[in-house]
Length: 340
Image 1 (cartoon, rainbow, N blue to C red):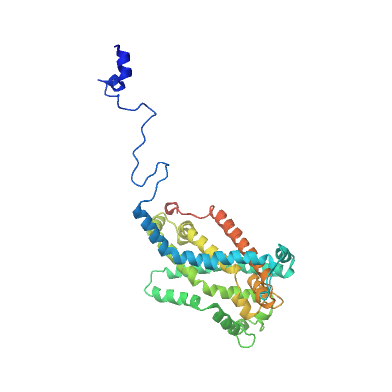
Image 2 (image 1 turned 90 degrees about the horizontal axis):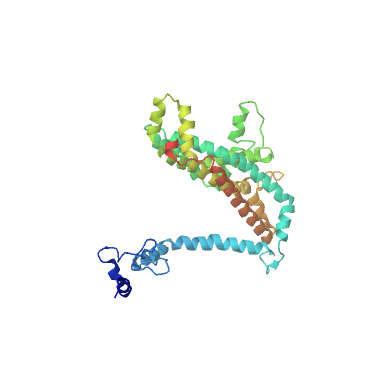
């Protein structure tokens, strides 16, 4: 029998003496053996221990999942469904399609409420960011009484908004309010600030700054996370305090600024309590904010369908605005400490 016939009859013999007969050729490596819990389809299956950990994790976060489903997702879906109907809450809803949305865009009171809300947001949010940052810088001072200062600066933010509204009604009273008494020291006449369309929103914007303590605490946490070595290096290079503030503090606080900006905008869009208590939307609809007009349609006018349409529009506007802020934040938010 020839050599070729012997090799064909026993392929393993062809590699005798070479040591490579048992190895697969290049490009045809044998797949690794399947581990326990793996399947041949390429998808890894969870081991019993991993399944147990998953069930335990889902059990612990189930209160949050249930809360989001019941108090967020379901109201959103239900509000959208009701917004497509004519519904007063007393009889069965009647489907009318997009008429509520069309009416909302054509309603001049909606335009007025949107204008008032945007005016409040454009002024209250930036001022609040600056005030909160100043409070945080004061709280971050290395002095013996810093704990007392932090408590005093944070206390006003603990006062509920409805209580603060009644307090400010007394403060700006045109006859005996301390604000008019203070302005009288400069020769200014007594003015009914809440009764004047020019000043009513300004009073509420000023009052909103008393709640800056919450944002100040978040700023304080951001300030404490900035490495002190950066300031030491800047002082060695001859940088003054203002240069250190704008070259180190502000750039490294931009993630915190972004967070406070998002929460501030969200709160400004839903401003309601102070306008409802102090002016009820007056004078001359100067403080008729969007949420107050939504509340009136739902509970005063019995137009739950129209109010639901306003709520859906507010939700969509908030989502678009948040997305725009996050998109713009890529240009100014700095997450790299070494870049400060």
